[in-house]
Length: 156
Image 1 (tube, helix red, strand yellow):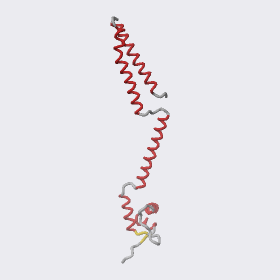
Image 2 (spheres, one colour):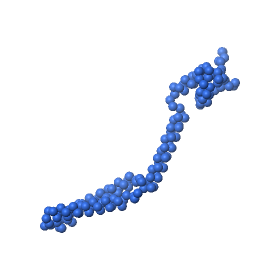
Image 3 (tube, rainbow, N blue to C red):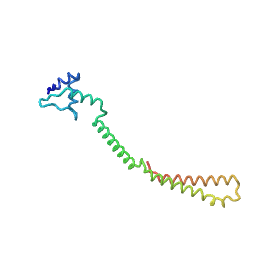
Image 4 (spheres, helix red, strand yellow):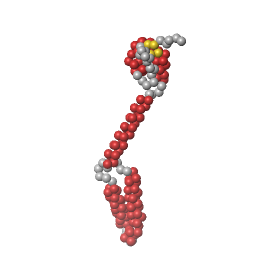
């Protein structure tokens, strides 16, 4: 059995045409070839490991860093959203939908009942006066609806 030649880190750097720092970096990673009892490395094992490292996609540490960044970003967004809800800058969508539907229902009911309340008052009036009275009634309904919506929204 032939004995495989082993090299120190300095000798590895020269043999691989790399800096000592680059060799040290690769050998410090998980899964890198281990040194023998005398602290020396087999050139072929180190070469295969480094070539394989170049072909691998982003390392687990990069993936982990990206995952942590996503988690921290999501937490920051959640805190920001909570602060904006608490300050009244943001409203719950369900509450807004309920309030708008309620205001629409009130406005619809007022407009639908307008004919019954206006008809007796409009009888025998000239067309110009009828138009003014109808316009005033519609404006009153819209003003009341706007006032209702104003009471529903938080004050800035």
